[in-house]
Length: 466
View 1 (tube, rainbow, N blue to C red):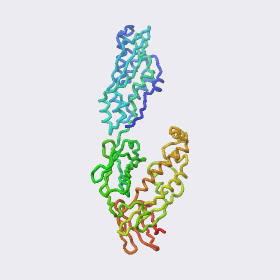
View 2 (view 1 turned 90 degrees about the horizontal axis):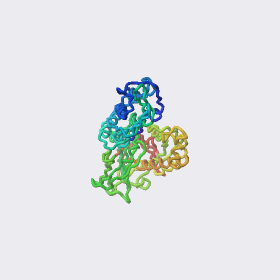
View 3 (view 1 turned 180 degrees about the vertical axis):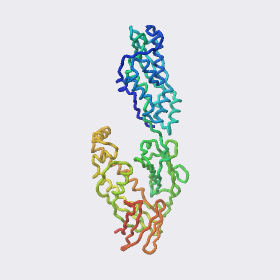
View 4 (view 1 turned 135 degrees about the horizontal axis):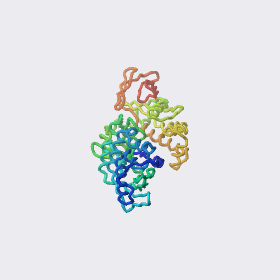
C-alpha cells in the first residue's frame, strides 16, 4: 500500500506555536523543587499526550485556552478534516503509544526544570508499506505489530504561581510524535474486479494475453507475474508482464511454431489470480496460426486508413492531456483463405508510421500530458532525475510507446470464417464481433468493423493487393 505521510501537526506548525502566560493547577503543592514533583508533572503531561486530549494538554502548559496552539491541537485531534480510514488508522496507532520517563535526566534550576521522556509506538510507517485491501486489515496489522518506533522529547517546565507548567510546546519533537495523523492512505484494490475485459491471441510462435482494467494499475505491475500452460502442464512459470496505465500484456515467444494444444495464460498479483484465459491452437496445417499475413497463402486485400482518430479516443479515455495532430495512415490487411477462414489485422509496417507520428507530436506540452505534469520545470526535473535532457527523455517516451503499440498491434488480429453469397460477404469472428460486407466493382470489399474502424460506422474499403 502506498502512503504519503502528511503531518498536520508538522514540524512547521509545531514550531509556530508560541507561548503565552496562563496558568492552571497541575498538582497540589506544586512549586517544590523535588525531583518527584517534576516526574509527576511529566507523567500527567505524557498521559495527556498519549490520550490525544487537546484540552488537557493545553491545561498543563502555559498556553491560553484560545491560543493558536490550542486551536492547532483541536484541528489535529478533530475528525472534520479526516476520512473514516484516516481516523481508524490514527486511533490504532495512538492505542499503541507508551512512554517512559527518565528520572535520572531531571534537571531543576530555580523556577525552570526539564526531564527526558521516550515515547514508543507501533512502527506504523513500516507496517503501512504493505498491501491491504481495506482499513480493517491495516488496523489489525498495526495492532499486531511488534516492531516499534521511538520519539524522544524533552519536557521543559516553568514554575508559575507554584505550578510546574510545560513551556516548550513549540518543540519540533511534539510534531514528530503525532506524525500518524492525517495519513494519506490508499488500499490495495481488488484487481480482478477492476478488469474490463481480456483478450488472448496465438500466432505462429507466440501466445499473448492482454488485460484491460477500468482504471490505472501501474503501481501494481511490478508485483505481477504470469504462467503459461499447455494442455494443463506448466510451460513457462513466473514470467514478467509489462503494461501501461490500465493495460497489462502477458506474452511468450518461442523458437519455431507453437505446438498444437490448449494454451492457458494466468496472471497473478502475488499469489492471487487476477485473470486467466485460454486459446486452442491447431498448428498442424490449418490457417488458424498463419504467421505473417503478407506471407500467407490466400487472397490479400488492403484498406488504407487513418489510425489517428482511434489514438485520439485512446488518449482521451485514458485521461492524457495531449493534443496530437496529423494523420497516421497505415494499411489494414484482410486475407481470405480458400478453406473459408479469414484474418484481419494491421500491416506490420504500422510501427514505422506510428514512430514518425509520435516523433512529430512529441512537443514539450504533449510530453507533460503523457506523464501528468503541469509545467516545463517539472518535465526538466523528471528528465534530470533520469540522467537525461528533456529531448532525450521525450525520445524515451517515443520509444516506449512505439514498443508497446507495436506489441499490441502485432497481436491484435481478428480471425474466423467467412461466407460469400452473391455480392454479400459475412464474417463470423472467433474472438471479436461478427460483421457484414459487400463485394463491389473490381472485387472491392466494403464493410463496417467497429473494432478496427477509427469511428463507429466507418466504412472500410478493401481492395485486392496489387
